[in-house]
Length: 101
Image (tube, rainbow, N blue to C red; front, top):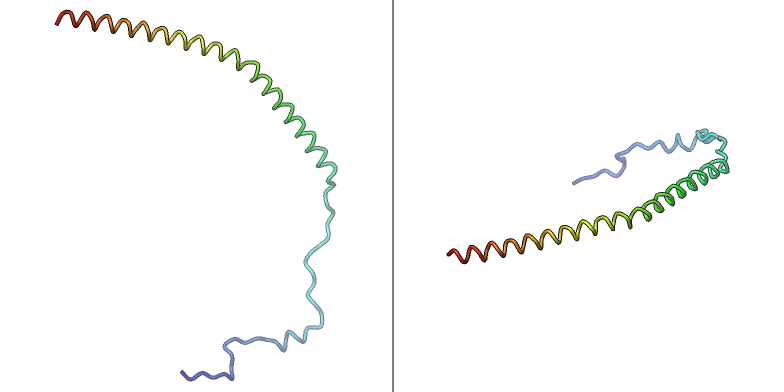
């Protein structure tokens, strides 16, 4: 492994870089920024409308929810009564079937 330290593997142009008298031009340009007050006002207006819409939806939901709950409760009681009738009918039929055996 005989390496030569006289020559580097990469060629750098340090001499040419140091000869540059000026820096390259800056590509960034100045521009006007948007007026934030108009955007904030528009955003606040939209957000307030959204909040009001959500309030109305929640109010409607809270009003209709108890009515639906009453209907579901009535239907549940009816289903429970039907199940009790079916159970008693099955018990009666089972008792009759036991007498025939």
